[in-house]
Image (cartoon, rainbow, N blue to C red; front, side):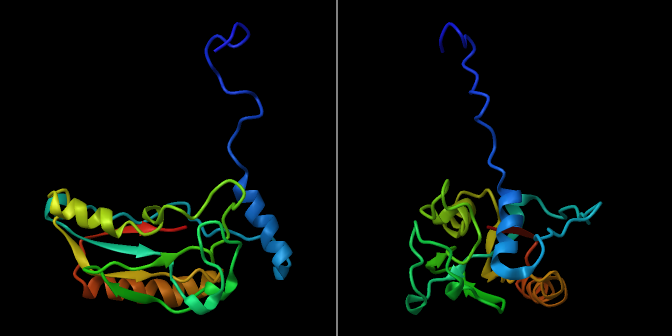
Length: 179
């Protein structure tokens, strides 16, 4: 705080990053011809929980990709890496640790890093929550959702596959870690 700023307010130029517009602009530079359009709805379906959270089986869905050693740099400060993308829904055993990365995601790499895997793959936290009784249990599998920028493929193929897998795991709730 100072005499000219007695309340400690942030300076006028300290405002949220305009990442949505940056991504729209970046989409054009990738050669798609028009800005990216996020899928959004006027309303969203909601299904109330039928169990208490501490009795519920919770599934994890992530857009993180399994680490691929032959796909180039995928480390914490790597550049965007399309070689690390995946195009099919995948699943993994939640009882074991997994090395997932987000170098294939279009994020603001100037202001963020890829250092904390808990932000895109919170499986260890879900296990801890189950052990502490916050949630009933972690579903036996987690599921990877491709990020190939096609609304049609996402809605008609990938989402349908993920829903089927989550249902097969008998999950009561889903945590979605979209990056």
